[in-house]
Structures are given as C-alpha cells and as structure tokens.
Image 1 (cartoon, rainbow, N blue to C red):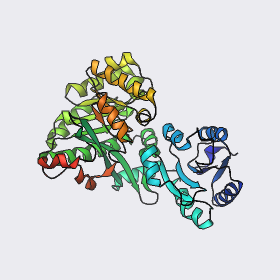
Image 2 (tube, rainbow, N blue to C red):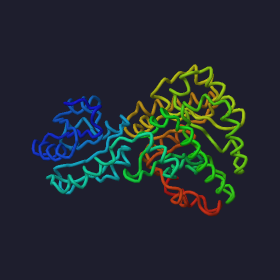
Image 3 (cartoon, rainbow, N blue to C red):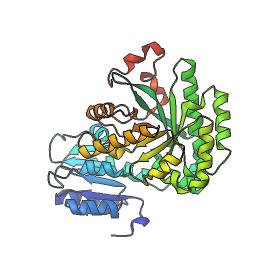
Image 4 (cartoon, one colour):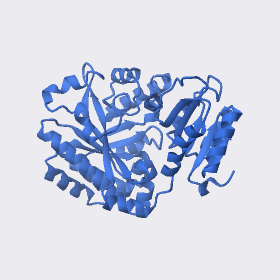
Length: 398
C-alpha cells in the first residue's frame, strides 16, 4: 500500500465478494484512487484507522458476523468518509437517507448488486472531484467572494409534556464552486493554520445573530449557539466586540451561547479563564462541547465559567440500544444540575432516545430525529410567523 498521505483519494472496498472487489478496484484505480481491500471484520477495523479512507464501498450485511454492525461502528467513530453501500439483496433494503438519519453517515449511494461501470462512474467520479485538496488561496477566495453560508439545526428545550423550540445552532458551510458544499471538518484546520478562523467565525456569528434579530422582531425569542475556535480564546477584546455587535442588532447577550470543545477549554486554563470570564460577565452563554469523549476534567469543569454542557453525539446515538449510555447520560445530567449547568444532548436519532432524555431531565436536545441542519430559508416550519402558532409546529416531536 502506498503512503496514504500522498493520495487525497482513498477508497476502501469492504466486501467478501471477490467480483465486487475486483470490479470496483479496477475502475477506481484507473481513475486515480488509492485502493485498500477488507474481506472480514478484522481487516475492516484495521484499515478504517490505518488507511483513513475518504470513500468506503461496503456491503454491511455480508462483511461480518451478525454481531458486528459496521454502519453503527462507523457512525460512532465520527469519521469523514463518504459511503457507497451495496448489498446482495434486490432491492437494497437500506436508503441513503435512512442510513444518514440512523448513524449520521454521509452516503452517496445505496444499491443492490451487481456493480456496473455506469453505477461506479456515477458515484465514484464526483467523490474524486470533491476529495481534491483545498488550499489557503481557495479559502481566502471563499471569504472574499461570499462563498460561505450558514445552516441551522434546531435545539429543543424540555417542557412539562414534551419539547419546545429553544433555539438553533449555526453551522458553517463552504459553497465551493467546483466541489459543492464543503463541511467544516475539511477546512477548519486549514483556516486555523493560516489565520482565517477569525473571519469565518465573524461570518457565522453575524449571519446567525441577524437571523435571531429578525425572529426577535416577529416576537420569537430564540437562542443561538455557535462553535468558537480555540484560536480565538487569546483575544481579550473579543467579548467587548461581540457585545457591541449584539447591541447593534437588538439581540440580548443571553440569546447567544458559544460552544467550546474540551481540548480548547482545558488547553491553556490561565489565559482561557480570562477570556471565558469576560464573556460570561457580559451575559453570553458558554457551552462545553463534546463532553464525555475528551479530557472530561471535572476539576476544570467547575473552575471554568460554563453555563451549559453538551453531551457528545457518540453517547447520544447509543441511548436507544445501550443501557450503559443511558446511565452515563443520567449521571452527566445530575452532575450538571448540581453544578448549576444546563445539559444538552446531541445525537438524538430516535423517539426512544428523546423519551429517555425527557425522563432523566435533560434540558435540551438536538439530532437528526428532530431535524437536520438546514438553510435559513427552510426554518419556517420551526419558526412560525406568529408566536401563537408555535405549538402546532412541534407536534411531530412533542
């Protein structure tokens, strides 16, 4: 196998069927992919980590014994691979939308075998284009030429009889002229390494706050959550500038929550504490993001001025199937409440999970079962024109 760092296009073919491996491998290799093959569970687990595929062609029903759910395992890893799902069952029992909803995976196609050249051409060549490496010049052009956009995912708040809309999380997207919609995992590191993260954060904050301001004028008081890079936790003037911008838009500071990952919050506590304290002193909320998978330092949790804890989606996705995950969530909810923190759980993928979270007193939830991230124009169903129409908008999730 060649050094994977030399190839931005890596295809893992995970299938016990030799014909599938040969047909897909020959086609992909001829068009510039680096190929790896997995014929059993052990090879699959090893290559997902070591080969780091950008695309995975997989038969999840025939790859491994029944006690190994390959799709669920991939979902829990939070990898960035695009999936091509093929099965021997005709028609294919799995739809891309269902896989995405259940596991949080990006699926380009789900089809029945046998593979054909036209099928591979239709699905592999677009992935090859999208997987080209992005560069600093591209990203600077995106900022200058207004190629950025924000998508919004609703967050629900626990109510006596169900759930009600609490607010939205703003998620940055790059509408690349050649590669289509590019997600933050593919460009945030590039932005941080070239001093562009501030411009990207300013964009998503301004767009989100403008949305909140518009809903305020209609009588809807919603909250906004935005991810904050660790690179911005060194700017002592950030809190003042943020409050000035909120004031200019008629948005209260307590309508904004900045989400910070565990690694960012605990990376340099002395300097971080000053910035976070300035933000909280001005009324801006602070959420500890991805809680439960990183440092999880309980000492720092109560020393730093957070107002919210967000349980990582890999735990939330396990709620419906795993008793241990439910116990962990209940423990985090109890801990958060005893520390005076609101608790939000991400990765809600089923009504069962939603019910469990309501029963254990979790304050807020978000996930694909409730709604996927969407463009601002599609938020009308979540934010009705009149506040009195609000209950009908949430009948499906109440």
